[in-house]
Image (tube, rainbow, N blue to C red; front, side):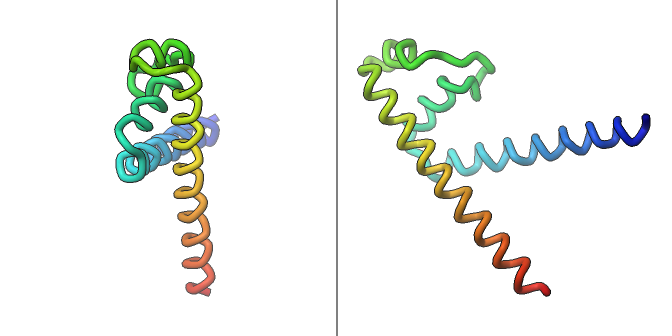
Length: 96
C-alpha cells in the first residue's frame, strides 16, 4: 500500500513540474494573444475551458481566427518541447 501512495505522490510532483515547464514555455515563446487563447481554451487560467466561439466573443474576433491562433500556439509549443527532448537526449549521450 505504501508503495502505491508514494507512486501517486511522485506522479503528482512530476505533473506539477511538467505544468511549470509548460507555463515557462508559454511565457517565453507565445505572444499574449496566443497565450490567452490557450489559457481560455484549455482552462489553464481558472480550470474552466471555453469553446472557440466563446473565446471569439470575449476577444472580439472570429471563431476561425481563434482556431488559427490556437493551432499556431500549439505548433510553437510542440516545436519547443520537441527541441528540448532532443537536447536532453543528446546530453544523456554525452554522459556515457
